[in-house]
Length: 251
Ligand code: NAP
Image (cartoon, rainbow, N blue to C red):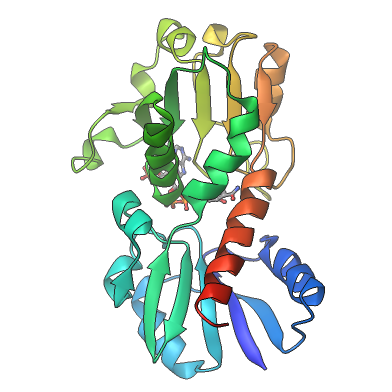
């Protein structure tokens, strides 16, 4: 039996075990098992992997996508450019990191993009926000990050605080993307605080959260007539890309 899994904190509400066990069955790979591993501190990564030598591949989620980097022997080019990793493969005892979030995000949102979506606001500055920013650059879409702690993001450019958002700024940016965990199960009432009077029917609202399928953020945007999408397609696509990477590595 080879083990694969998801590390992060919390991981209990993740859909990944279901997605991957379906994938393993489809591929007839019944010797593979995918589990969630709650790992509150990334400093425990080396001990965790040493104690679980049967684990050959991992996904990484909140809050470790960036802090995992120093524990890896090699980092693929796109993950390096993004500065975050969500997929790991172990070869000869060493871990290599990849990022499939950017790819999943690009593929999932392309059908929704219109010419008017030239400027975006990315809510959050974590690993997922960085993968989204990388993808927007590739798509030629200008953006600002919006953070609750803008003064702590000195290593990043284009960061403003939520308190600086005005209705005019919201009207000027027709693509709004939630890359914070606000609204995720079990705290489903959570939502970014923005001047909603600026949101209208020309907006595309993207929530990377996929559980629940319709978040409070999406519901508020629907009330304003905006188009909305959740993180379900991105989740499926980034998982498919992780699977491809593992197969290419000889899983
Ligand atoms: P992360 O690296 O921990 O970053 C979280 C970001 O959210 C940080 O910028 C944090 O701000 C901000 N934040 C947290 N609580 C906040 C609050 N109450 N108000 C305002 N900002 C807040 O996490 P991540 O890996 O980027 O993931 C973020 C979300 O995206 C998660 O819900 C995750 O499930 C989802 N996601 C979905 C997919 C998908 O396939 N659909 C893929 C990746 C991620 P501070 O820096 O100020 O703490």
